[in-house]
Image (cartoon, rainbow over all chains, first blue to last red; front, side, top):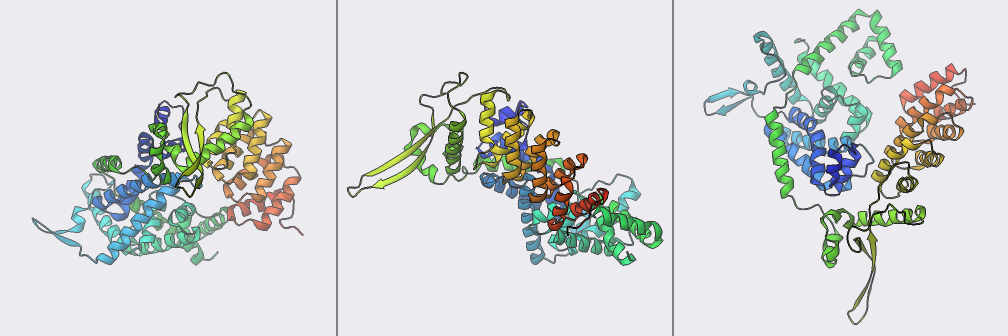
Length: 201
Length: 307
């Protein structure tokens, strides 16, 4: 029986065992490890890069890196931290490249004429109440604008703290910096958002 | 605290990132200052608005990602196996699919090391050991020495490792001995974590407690030390465990371990705690632990400083 088979039987549920089985080449164990973490990885990537296509690329690249380098994981930090280090680095690279590449316009061409970029933003958690939808749409427009104004690091720290509930210390570890630097990033991001959204809330 | 300082602390207050003392001061200020209180309310409203603005991941996106990854992994070349990938064909018996890992140098070395420890603890083959699954049971080989001579002949010394499985209950002596050996494996932290995790349920036995004390005080991996600490919790009032906790409190580099050591040491309130806490105050960098230690020392009617 493979190590993953043992896991399915509930004999061993510890993530360490799963990692070790994956390190030993057990494909099913690797997939289980991915399934434990991939929803939050995708949520992070999607919310940082704000594009399904790019989030998909980052997801793929992140887990392929995990696959290729898992044998180097030495249990000296949590797997979550190790994984988030990979994902946030890829997201930051992506955001930095995008920042250089574009100051692209808020509208773009489609087969049916010019459309506002914010008209095609994906749905958020807002309910279907029309007034609320209008508010939600305006808010999203402003949030999208302010997120573009944040530096990639500010954006990553805000996302990890606000939506993923990670402690600043862990965010510092994931970004390869100190808790203090992460705290300063969060502070600057909050200031910029207050300026942009202040009259809205 | 001035309004300006409080306003700067508000985001950290909402994210629960202030120390106990700073939070206390900010809250006291907020009770007395309508302006800052209003600022907090606006910040809370912005937080709620930002919650709403989070993009929800469509299920189809997740499914697509998983599908793509599955295909990419299936197509990916096997992970780098280094030297042994080249040597493997020389040993036809070692091509068993379940044995890939141990052919990697680190794996092979770990096995050799495990064998060494097993040999120390395992004097005679016990009755419940299963026969070798394959004739010979050879699963890993390692070139130990290479001696070329001028005629073109090469003499190679090979170290061979055999593997067999044994199974039994955790409290059986033979299983326990192997777990105790694995808990000290010098090369594999993952193996140590798993072993200590199993052993911590067997702490009624003194030999297990001693092993966990050693892990707590000398293991380089924080995961192993945490597991050892968990196992020792019920024995915190025992003298040897208490001594180890006092040492961990002042020596361990990980704040989680130090915090837990405080939690376990405080209930008995023995006098030796004061000295350890005072020593801790001399070197502690973690603000939360510092403020907690200060409070404890005050509660114990002891000076916060050593003189």
